[in-house]
Image (cartoon, rainbow, N blue to C red; front, top):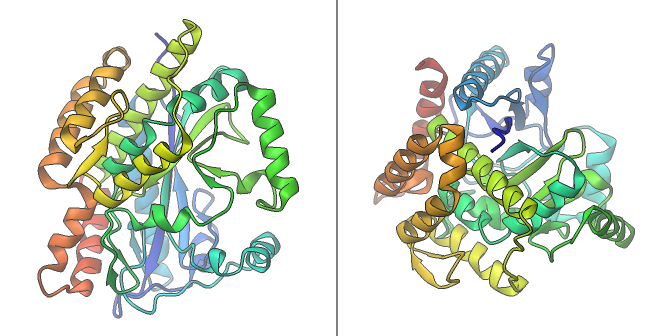
Length: 363
């Protein structure tokens, strides 16, 4: 079984250390930093790892990238906050001065203006476009579980949304985002992308915001459903699960095993449960399609990807990581615990800032 390389991209916010509000200083933060990039809004930036087979190397890259970004943010009078959504009221986004971004805003209006959110994208090696499309077709019922593991955005602009991952709900508003019908092969994928762009639902291929897609610049499948995780242990857990899912789906395709057909409406229901409940409620089991406690759905996940986890040396990492996030409730529960009964959202931001700093200070 092939041990595939994995790379991770993380989006994150810049926060004023006094007010704890987002600050539009990414231009100053990224200046002179080759490994730190601007994003859609000036309150955001993005870092990434190199591709590695050993997830410890991925974690080391991300830790160093966070450290560099935090130092650059400090020099611009800001602090780095690894969180998926703005927590405090009044945190609006200033569009990065980029012609393409401004075209997006003109076309998509409020959908674009509300897209102030930070995700994590996992890239996993594939052999070619045909394997990539076969994998993304088969991944569809499993990705809600990846979303649930990472869910860490219950608050948005001063309110408790009632969701574990509000970021996923926000991102769903883009007309080129979300779950789709199977493409069948690479030609089917290209035809679908061309039709979406021709319809006006996407400016270009960079706006194909599907839950999983063949990456434009790399020979990878890019899985895009996860909230950015404050805790790097959660990031690595998501990366390990993503790699094992890609490997499992690719092996099934090579063996001629076809994925079970799922209606898009049921997939949407599975995704809704994941972003609403996270790890604290019910998820759809990808094999039985029935709602079950989150722990049972994740047990199905581990059984299904177990050969790939063992081959990559990730079995203990994933089983122990899933037990940990089920025990503590994941990122969403950690934010709600920080808020307390009084809904102290400044305390939430302070907790995120402290845990962000700990994620690159603690080797």
